[in-house]
Length: 193
Image (cartoon, rainbow, N blue to C red):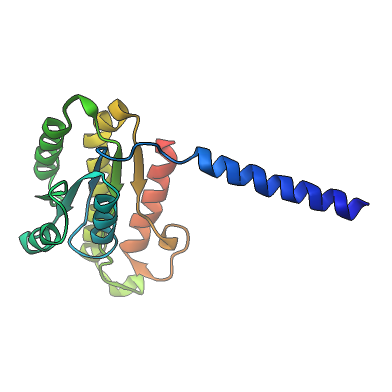
């Protein structure tokens, strides 16, 4: 009898979680604004294409003109590319002002902070401070700067923020700036909650 009771409770639990999952779906995705950093290649490029196909109005930031042109060539007219170097505060402020003008009173429904680099890694005594600086400036300081500048737009739309991190934000496998930067991203995520 205990077995059947537990089985029944397990099935009810599965059903309950399935229904809860359906309630978590966002209705009416079409036309919502999403800003994604690091769209030249990799995850950011793929995310921009997927969001575009789902009907979002995507602002895809790229570091290079080549990356921006290649992405624009394979997506709809709803996706707009913009050049952004997350290490440059003026660039971030200018892009945030441009996004604000584009979204107007609607706000920004999603921010995906994806821009990142690995940088050199190895035993710490083989590295100097410059090997740490660039990954921290891109992966952490740039991410924080973009978030701070886009936060009023996110709040206006009651939007979401996705900060791309990695297992490197919990476990360091070697020296270099990548792991401290990702630990910092995890700490920043906790401070946003």
